[in-house]
Amino acid sequence: MVVLHVKWAAAAAASSSSPSPPALSSEVREEEEMEFLYECAATSAVEDVAAALAGVAALQARLLSLCRRIRERNGVGGELERAMAEAESYTSKDQVRHNKFISHRALREHIKNIEKIAVASLQESSEVLCLQQKLPDDKHESVQLCWAGKELTMGKKLCDYIGVNEKTKIAIKLTHVPHEH
Image (cartoon, rainbow, N blue to C red; front, side, top):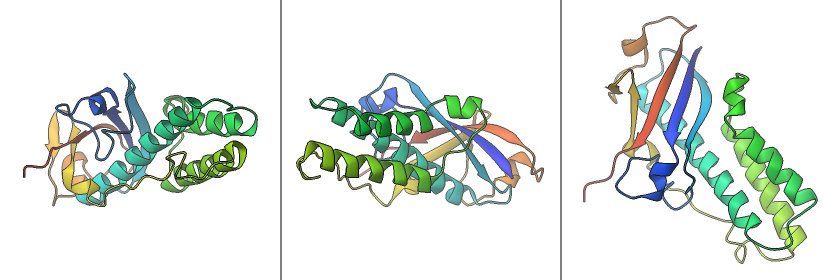
């Protein structure tokens, strides 16, 4: 399996003219670069990898945005604070330093857990807390992957760029390509 060290700029999401992962412009406003590790086969199609990476980045941004919105409210503490701290730890750069991968399933579980605890502890509906947010389904169509200064072309396989060595670790930059209407 090839290990992808994925980096995407959360600061870019704050301005609409800068590149950022899809569906993140309203969710992440931090001034830092986000990163995570992802594992896939060298023979994976670039568009499949792009869709998976965009999905993880969007969930990571949604989780951090959710924690930030809940912290802005008064009365957060106890079980909710622990759940948010655990979730933020899971999405932190420390996971990369410790060679731990982030999964869609775990991110969704953290989001569900925080939403459930927030609704119970703050005794308000999820709509009032603005917890439910829909993400667009066209993530991979507006994502660009770059490695070693080259754009990875949709329609090719990852092994066309890195070879067939399954023990490779590469750094990938994930950026958003604005739609032209």
